[in-house]
Length: 509
Ligand SMILES: Cc1cc2nc3c(=O)[nH]c(=O)nc-3n(C[C@H](O)[C@H](O)[C@H](O)COP(=O)(O)O)c2cc1C
Image (tube, rainbow, N blue to C red; front, side, top):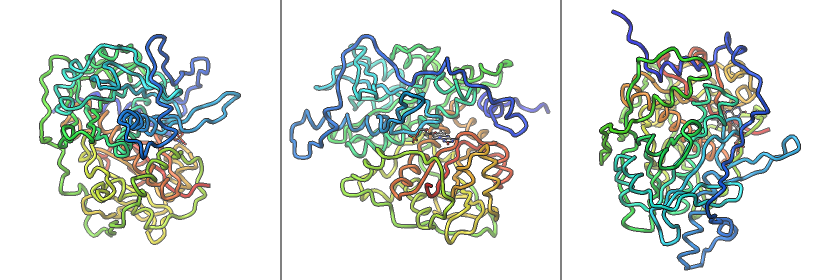
């Protein structure tokens, strides 16, 4: 029987793998003359300054207007605001609340207003340099948004939405076709911030990944050759009883393309993005309650005779009224070097608890079931190099059973250094978390668009890990470049699991 051709998502994944044999031919010289600018500028439009609302907390102010602006201002600052300025080659580089591979910031954040008493209807772009919203289109587009999102129930009740887009070249300039992976990991980190910042500001973000791409792009007036919408988030205002909505479905399938032509290097990213779009005229429907979003009750891997260690622990304390969560979001930075020292097992357990057990944070007013696209598709493995009381080796993390299941005994420091393309972060980290997914199963469920969902979910988990680590005084950094297949081979991760993302954890130097 002839072998079935892989779908474009599987093809893209294979084509963009890093391999020790080919990595040298992949590394290209950066064209500094064409370095992208990570900001958008608008020549026309009126500006809404959000800065006055971040300086002082209007704790005792009963003024509705001040409170309203304060919440929106804080939400945006804690999601994608500028949080540091670093000197660089005679000028300055701005860092943001969400991390980004290579500091290239391909994401843009738009706010859509249905027309609230304070924010007139229309389209706004979040200008992080000035912490303001530029109102660049003044007509109501809400109905068009609803239609483009297959009448997602959350948009019926809400007044505000965020749309995240990707400006592809910003990341492709450096990472070429493989940039697509990092763009969606970045967006996932940003979604993690929106989720948690929402809790600080009494918004419940409802995630929408299924929409007609062309319709959303048109609605935003973006240049579709350069930029594309990648996630819509309806912002439910929890201070309005009518906006307290149930959990809703987030993801819809696209087609699965197996009949694609030969695609030259450098054109794969754009081709693949187009193939993951949902076309106008396709019949799709969000189910309420969600058809697939219930957590599966069983963990995927259970290896006979393996050692199992419980990770049940006391939740991380985010302080009164989540104050420490805000402090953590604003001070988070990716660690640039670890000192190689050990973490305690309690610390590792706390990191896992905050990331995978949101139900343990209900008493702290965090959502017990934040929106992801489909976490049932993602698995977690942990390579332990230096955790007190835990044997070195590779473990499967079973989130339902809340335990680590050992699959390989060995200290992988040397190998991790190599797997992370020679980055010292891999060698000196105390633990490296690996997020994976079985692409074939995932594509069978959601078509090629699942590639976006998987990377955004992995990024979202990565952001929770980042914040938990910073809160515990530890170091953390994502790693988007690794020798894909060797990660499986060396750590003993089943070959069907495509590696999506690594997060290194340790003690900062
Ligand atoms: C998806 C992703 C991949 C990353 N990959 C690497 C990496 O391979 N090596 C590294 O040193 N940092 C990596 N980082 C960290 C970024 O370099 C860092 O986020 C960026 O410089 C901005 O700094 P900040 O996180 O301190 O705000 C990654 C971050 C993300 C979100």
